[in-house]
Image (cartoon, rainbow, N blue to C red):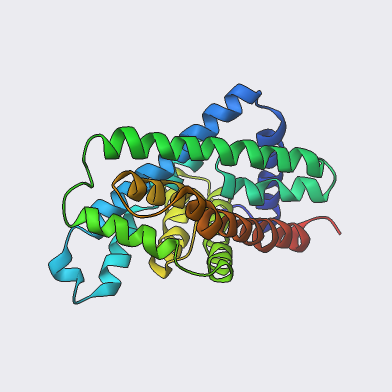
Length: 261
């Protein structure tokens, strides 16, 4: 199996980051980011249906539920990577190398992150409302109580815990993106998306875009969670942690290790 070297992968990541920040018009960027949020939400609902669909078995084997959810959730990132959508957490890593070598300004990077974050949120909400809530996919047991339990757990931890879990989540996600860039064939890219993302789901880390699906879905289904709790107790610390995990631990580190001296 022939893969790109770390130096070649960094070059590909740099080119991808520049393209994501400069080559798309505002409307195309919004559409690409909306689709990325929708893809992650599709992976999210699949992880609920499969992961919590065997309560008799997983009740005695809690790790099995995490494994099942982790095995299917990566379909969202696979769609993002292969189809070229714009995911906030992936862009956290990809836009940093060109910023470090002054091919992108910090303003352009932050602007891209802000637009993509908002459009990802819209895509997650659309799938949650139209394709899950209105269709009743998770309105019956064991899914209804499972969705509520997920959301309560994600909004009950402290700011610091969610922040640290956010670092872990996007470290894994951006490593998956980096590994996918190192692959040359479709199968290599899909496998690269599968393993690190499965790890973050099984470990229970916090991915802000995924949480834009899980928590609002629970709220739609009657969970006692306010909009303020959604943002303050989860999305804000998870987003900050995701930025550190992706931008610093992947984008900056690999640019330092493999960039020009």
